[in-house]
Image (cartoon, rainbow over all chains, first blue to last red; front, side, top):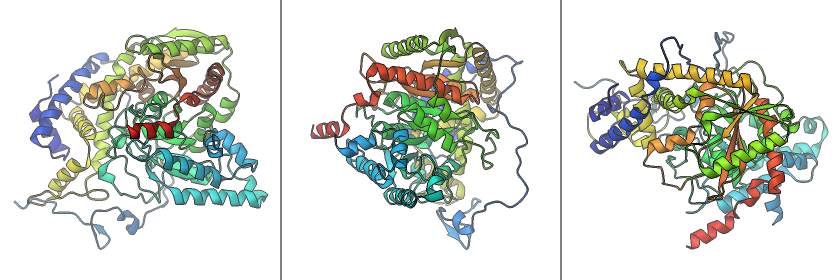
Length: 98
Length: 518
């Protein structure tokens, strides 16, 4: 398994939408390399015959009656919004200018 | 001791009895706790268990209970057993009328438009909510030092950590600032703080307590549970919050066995209790090991048969956990994007696009540990690494479940120390994430397999005089066994100590004053 380096962290930070300073990238790359190294053994623990477990106590087909339950008013939904306009969330430009 | 000091030291069960008998009012009890919070929680050397104190609403609920009791009749008879007994709520659980921060700057000042199901159940039982307790940001940590609002201090030694992530709930209960509290446990966040503060904490069977309204960290691991000073009190609270909830699709449809009855009729005679070979010995502090062995001896004397079981795959649990948890967290925390709620930070320069606003918001709103876990999770889920990391970790989960199945074929309950060490000093492990993660080595397997676990005080370590936790584990849905065994062990230990362990904690108000004078 490949070690994690500073460029990887910069790429991952972009994917995760977290701006990081040069100092932060350096520090995080060092810390993550240690953590990733320590969890390496996990990939060798189980053979191909072992199935994956995604949920500890699986339930299937959890449905409810198809009727309208509790809903929030637009006002409630917008109550924590940083910015709103005419009953909607107001956001900066979705697309770049260029 | 003043009258109020006597009142706040009573168990929730004893308070409930006094309230029902009319010997004390809920307003008196609630006010006594609010006074205690005012006396020991604030200031530079205060415990800092609370992020928000809910004075007005708590007293109003208390007055309502008192009025119903005073009027008598059917309404008084229908009151829940815990009506009027106050409680604190971990600030990861959403509440109408109080802010919910998750210990993060990204949610500073945010108010939820809805109550978590567990909070609704507290309200239905008419339990006054004293306030919201401190935690590591988004419950990510083992010391409460990752809270964006400053650490909580351990009431046993104000220079030490109260555990985490639920250090606020555990410290509040240990410092007699609340008789009960709610916590959440993803890898040990209820049990490990319980261990290092000398309190009781329970992680219920996965799905047996609704998580609707708990801000999710790792959805396949998270569980809400009770925090208290006695085993019976946890059972009482567990019974209030448990049961099916259609709002949580992982909620188990069938109710658990009567937990309160199990705690009241504790019995270990003829029970097989399994020591997990891999969860003690090397890497565990000597004083922790000594108290653990003492508990085994007491259980043996009470008629239990002690057997040794082996769970060879537990050695992979910590590694697998630190792949699964960050993976799920990175996905769950994607919703904090500065659009629908919480903080929005604008980048200093143009262009002002949503992508750049998200980047600036999340950079300013999240602390280091949260960023670390999001990056780690994004890495483990990325193309080319998914199978090797997340996929492998899920297979380890199967192996851990098989280990538990084999162990429970030989024993009714399993036992181990809750944490490898007693409370460490504030700051000691803050810059070493890996050392911090190791605190959860004994608690993580239960989350990976979904089985219930309980931590109760096992005494004080010889070398430092700090609390040691004993962990009990039971098969999924058999939470009652934890209470049955826990109640017995608690009474045997207390008989040996001549009273509750917390009676031996230093007098807090005095120690805060002395330390502040230094």
